[in-house]
Length: 175
Image (tube, rainbow, N blue to C red; front, side, top):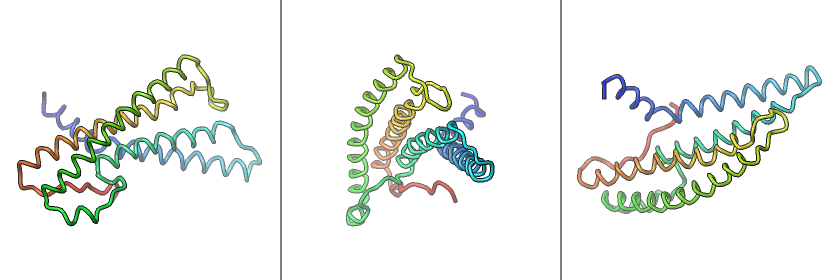
């Protein structure tokens, strides 16, 4: 693979969720801002504005879940880890990721089934007139991203068992 492709993929791996989160967050803020002005200044509001904000929030939540897995920012009890050795911490992280992997696989299967059913029946949103399935797709997309990040985490932690580098504890999303 060429160096520019590798560099692009590394940047995508590092920043994909961050940029998607930023895009959806800005979309929500702008849509709600426009709707507030329309409602209170122009005494008129749209049905599509509320839907754009709602469905953007759904995508924001699922992409955020993937980002939390990547950066180890999901809810856990860190006080227990402080009493463990480095190897013990890695084992706990690996076991936690394996459990999470199982749950994510099941959730992906069932959420994909819901997506295909919605696609089959072609239900549309009231305000936007877009197939509801594309918004339901946020769940299988989110779980797919989480699976990818869990596999990366497992690979990193298993390889760390053989080295002396410090246990990965994640990075801050926005500094």
